[in-house]
Structures are given as C-alpha cells and as structure tokens.
Amino acid sequence: MFNEKTCQRCGTCLEQCPFLQLPIEDAKNEISIMIETRNTRSILRNCAGCGYCSIVCPTVSNPHELIKEIRLRYTREKGVRSLSLITEEIPYNLMSISLENNREEKLLELNKYENPPKSKAMYYVGCAIPYYFQDLAKTKLLEDLPLLGGMKYCCGGYVHSRFGENEARIKGLELYEKFKKLGVEKLITFCPECDNMIKGVYPSIIEEFDVEGQNFIDYFIEKYHKGELKIKNKINQRITFQDPCPWRNLDKKIYNGPREFLEIIGAEVVEMKHNRENSLCCGAPLAMSNRNLATKIAKERISEAESVNTDVIAFMCTGCLTTLSRYATERNIKSYYATELAQMAIGESPEFKILENAKMLQKQVIKTISENPNILTERFIIKNGKVSRL
Ligand code: SF4
Ligand code: SF4
Image 1 (cartoon, rainbow, N blue to C red):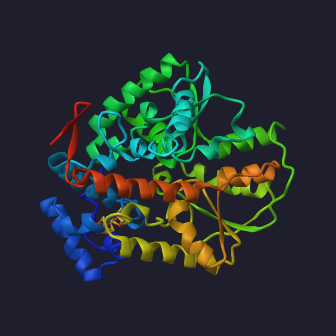
Image 2 (image 1 turned 135 degrees about the horizontal axis):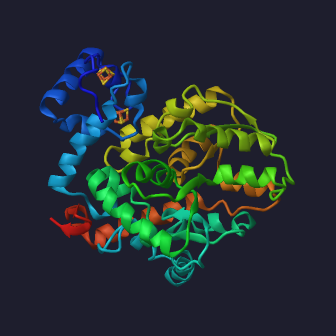
C-alpha cells in the first residue's frame, strides 16, 4: 500500500526513477498531482514497473504501489492486449505464437511439462522455458525431479500486475488446487516472476497457500553441499550479476544465492554500482512501447557492468538476458543464463540458444501481427477469474 500520510511530496522517487529522471520541481509537482487525482497518463507511459522508486523513497512510503493502483484502474477500464496475457482462453499470445515454429516437437515437450508424475518437489519452469527456451531444460542438472510448467500452470504474475490482488487470489487458488492434485509441496522456481508469486504474493493473500518456493540457484547450492552436484570446470572469470526486478518484493536473502553459486563455480564476483535491491531494470518492459528509452536504459546498465571490468554478466531472467546481451557483446562482455554457467561448471556444453530463440519469437510475432492486425487493437479484461473481450 502507498502511504499517503508519510509521503513528504519530496519528488525523490520520480527524480531518481531511471526511466523518468524528472527535474526535481517537476517530480514534486507530479507526485502531488498523482496523490490528489489518482491519475497520471504521462508517468504510466514511461514507467517500466521496476519498483526502484520505492527503494529510493526516504520515508518508505512505497510510491510504486501508488503507480500500480493508478495503472490497475486503467487496465480494468481499458483492458490489455492479448500479447500481455498468458492463457489459453484467448486466440493469440506470446506462447501460442511461439508454437508456430517446431510445433510438433514443442507440443510433445509441452505435454511432459503439463502432465508430470506426482511428486512432493518439482522444477517449476514457468512459461518461457516450455514454449521458447526449451533448450535450457535439457541438462543433467534437472534430471532429479519432474518438470512442471506451461500456460496451464502459469504463476499468474500477469494477473496480479494487471488486474490486482482479488483476481490474483482467484488465480492462485486455482493453481493451488492443481498443485495439491499433483502432490506438490515444494516448487523449485526459475522465473523471477514465479519467485515473486510463489514465495511472496500467494502466501500473503491466500491463507491456505502452503506450497514452498525455492529459487533454483539455492537448490543447486544445497545439492552442491550435499555432494550431489560436482564442479568439474572452474569458471575463472570476473562475473557480475543482473538482479531481477521482481525480487525486490522478497526476503533479501534471495540476493545471496547467485553470488554464492558464482563463487562455488570459481568466479570472481564483481558488483555493479546498483546491485541487489538497488539494482536497475534492464529496460525490457518498455521495449515495445518506447524502444528509444528502453535502449538508453539498457546501454546505461551495460556501462555500469563495463565500469567494473567484468568478463561476464550472469542472468536469472531470460528477458534481461535477451535485452542486455546485444549491448554487452558490443563491449566484449559475455552474457550467460545461470543454468548455462552451471552446465559449463559440471562439464556439459550448453546450446546457448536463448538469443536465437528470442529472435525467432520476435519474427513470429511480427508475422502474426501482420496477418492479424486486430491483435494490436483488441482489448481483454479479467473479471472474477474469467477473460473476456472488451
Ligand atoms: S513517495 Fe517518497 S520519494 Fe516519493 S514524494 Fe513521497 S516521500 Fe518523496
Ligand atoms: S516503477 Fe520503476 S519505472 Fe516506474 S516510476 Fe518507479 S522507478 Fe520509475
């Protein structure tokens, strides 16, 4: 909740926002208008929803919650495009579009993710891995537990961020029933949004939600200490880590895992100026709506990495990796997803196909939109758990 009583209207939040960077007087003015009118189209247009404003607020008033409240009103009234939804109830979304490439093979794999054997613990691989980054799951590292994922088991992060807590509760209860049917007590999470929903949001809004969430890197660390994960090749490089934005809502201990794991595999961990809960967004959320701003933000982030002379940036969000890696390459910095680093450390040769797959998805989206231009105009809402066209 935004705390209007403690807010001093100082403007620090909007002045220090990496995307808005408003002059201080404009920032003071804008925050006052937002508080009084609960309205701000100009801020919403360039807000990536990264949550950094709440980190810099000196009175801990949580301005990000104010922005979310205003955004929620807009999405409830005006709806969202199908590309922002992850559900089989609509004709086109990123997941269904991605199936146009290698359809048969992907559907076979997807069938495994959506119909795992019963198990108390599972790898919860989210939506992106089953639909467009399937190579990431092809590793011995993930052979000890069943894999669960796909649209049927989407964590519902999109429901929470776009349609609010009540809709998220409905989504979470449905999901919880599905987990219980599978006998799941613990999920090893991959996507930072899944981390946020399983470890943060659902336990706070659904009383009976007792499924434990553990990030995969913490699980790998546990396996390493038990002797179940053997390091064969040390990665003797300077590595910095891009902390994902959704982690800001979680217990700060989550930031230790990637650093500890990088040290276990032999890396020298170097920190960018903005790190852990102070980390900066990669710019991806604005890639479609304001490409110039998204590019500027991405380049600034890479400049921070370059200034600490890192050899590698490690990622645990495929969105951050696909956004930042092209600019990292320009500065001779390598980009790896955390499982790729783990694979190299245990002696496997990863496929390194994240970028290729992301480019393929982008082409498919452009083609699908050109054939179905209504994708850009149609709007959908979610009410009482049901998706409908506006
Ligand atoms: S929310 Fe915080 S940073 Fe923003 S104006 Fe209020 S006190 Fe200042
Ligand atoms: S959520 Fe991020 S992008 Fe949006 S106003 Fe806050 S700091 Fe800026």
